Image 1 (cartoon, rainbow, N blue to C red):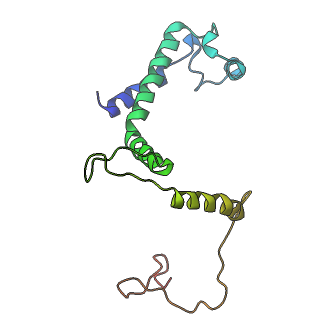
Image 2: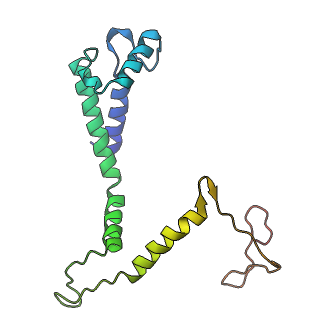
Image 3: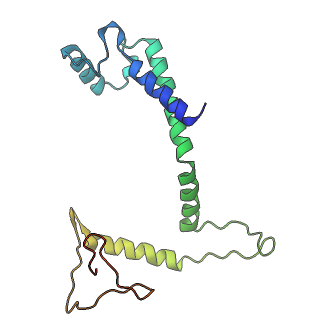
Amino acid sequence: MTLEEVGAAGANQLTTISDGDEGDALHTPDEDHVAKLHRWALAINIADDTEIDDETLSRIGQLVTREYQIDLATLSDWRTKTEKAEKIANQIAEEKTYPWPKASNVLYPLITTAAIQFAARAYPAIVAGSNVVKGSVIGSDDGVPMLENGQTALNPQTGGPV
């Protein structure tokens, strides 16, 4: 079964989960359903509630497990990249095999430490509560920005120089 098929099956199953003969609480909100949702919101574990039968709990559990597996599969590339970046940032030394086995692998944290210290000290000045620093030009700004190939940088919205 492909991820798309699993996702479609999960979506179909979700729309069929209902609360017995009373109808679907998501589509027919009456006072009983609102009261039930309120009780569930305040409950520590709604699975202990006698209003939910074991079959419904089982279907919800299967759906959650299936959707979790889909989420894990879709973010595997991101997790791999993030783990690699964390190893670099934390400077975890691993045994090298290039250019020869057990070659020297010195990791000196000078640049990492400097970058972390700068970010830690600059952040409060850049973001103060909900206010974010905005840049402003001081002095003359008569120049026209040029691209590497010598052409004038154009604003895509106006067509004029940036």
